[in-house]
Image (cartoon, rainbow, N blue to C red; front, side):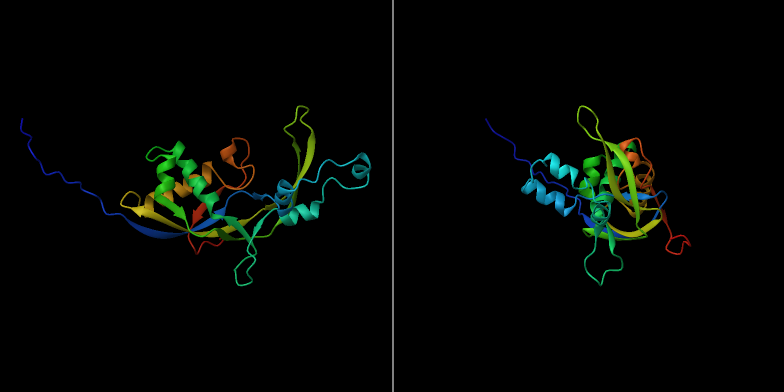
Length: 209
């Protein structure tokens, strides 16, 4: 028996990256609520249950302390702002928009584009936001949650994407869609009930921006 030898070759597309800058303006207030350092420490070293005497002589919550612990911040004095938002929040919003908009899957978008930096400087004046929530226990016990809310906010994103699979126009459209149907922060449209954290893309010379 004889075999015929054939020459097979693979045509590999050369990939490259490009980066665009996007000016983001909040359409609805954004609620910030990161896990505090105190909560992280208690995950490592639980403090145990309080006695009735301890409960009776101490506040269950410290609103000012929780308010100050709620946002992500930029510790370096050279940064343009004190408040920040995680870049991964915007990448997650873009990936989520890909689920509702045909053309690319959530996993594909995660591989083909990313928002640069870990924390993005955010402009806005923080206000104290207190709301009544329900715990996940059987009795749905009410509790008070203190967070930071920014009625007006803006920031600039640097997004890198892989070409030729994506281009600047498609990335901008995905980010704009994410601002409408996904949002960022707490109680955002992605969860189905809230409408906080929505945003839009604007030009750098936009008066509101």
